[in-house]
Length: 248
Image (cartoon, rainbow, N blue to C red):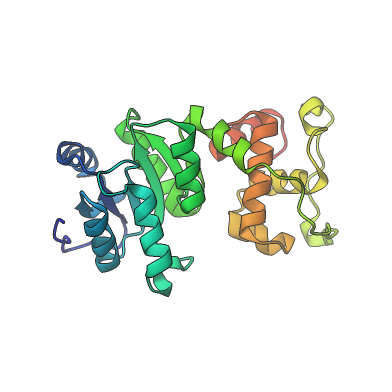
C-alpha cells in the first residue's frame, strides 16, 4: 500500500486508486497529476491494502478495478460497507467509480449493486476520466456509453408507490412546448416528466428528492427510466436533449 500523500488541497477532489497493475496505476497518476481539480492521495494493489488505505485517507472518490487476485473491487466495497464504521456508509463517505478493462455486463451490474456510483472502461481519455471523477463526486451516476444500457435494463422498475404531490405556485413547472418530441414524452410518467423538468433546471438528485418528497434512490430510478426512454447515456447528454427540445 502506498503511503498517504501529504498536503492535500482543499479545493481538489481527493482520489484513491485501486488496481493490481502497478504500471496502470503509474499511468493514471501521471495522467491526473497537475490537474488542479483532482489529487490522488493514495493507491493500493490488493483488497486488504485498499480497505486499510481508504479508511485511513478518507478519499472523496475511489477508482476501483474489478478483477484483482484477492477479490477485486466488489470485495473492497463489501469490506467497507459491512465491516467499516458509519463514515464508510454515510452520504458524505467516499463515492466509488469502477475503472476496468472489462465491459462484461455481469461485472458492471455486480459493482453497481455493490455500491459503486459509476463504471467506465480503461480506454477512456484522461479528460474523460477527470470529468467522470468530478461527476461522481457531485452525485451523478456515470457510465461509458455502451455500458449505460446494461445498468438501465438491470435497474429499471415500475413507478414507485409514492403519490404525486401537486406543485405549489412557487414550483409550478415549465409547460412542455408543443413542438417537443411528443413520441418520447408520451412514454414518460407524470413523475418522470417532473424529474425531467427539474433536471433541465439544474437540480441535483438530493434537491429533487427534497422538492418531490421522495428518496434520492427513487430519484435515481426515475432518472434511469428517463435516460432509457429518451435513449440518452448520461445526464449531460440528457441535458442536451432537453435543450434541443426546448424543455428547459
